[in-house]
Amino acid sequence: MLRNLNAFTLLLCVCINSVGCGGGGGDAPKTVPATGTITVDGRPMGKLSVAFMPTQGKVATGETDSEGRFTLMTNTPGDGAVVGTYSVSVAPILEVQEAMPGMDGYKKPGPPPFAKKFTDHKKSGLTATVDADPAKNDFKFELTSK
Image (cartoon, rainbow, N blue to C red):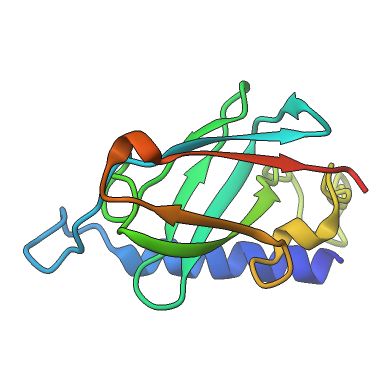
């Protein structure tokens, strides 16, 4: 399970890095604002990473706050997502460990506080369609712990 979570985190980092830091030049895709809320068993949950994975194109990502709210970004913080359909995954944001594996002080991350399937966009069952009208782009995802 840790291997899958680490693989997802690595994939998410690669996707975010592929966005680049060029300031959204002329070739950046047009985005529309998109937000949402994630709850687990009815309770909002913070410190979660959300990834909207398109069939092609750039990934949109966000991070939940203590109220479970997130704002997506594709090119620059808060710019939203490209219009289209996405499969969605959610993963806990791992706290930085003070020591490396095998060293004193290392703590193995525990399982996510929800069903493992939600960490894989192909298995999560979560989908979203980003509309050209930003008013239609407030997504609600209810995850379960089992």
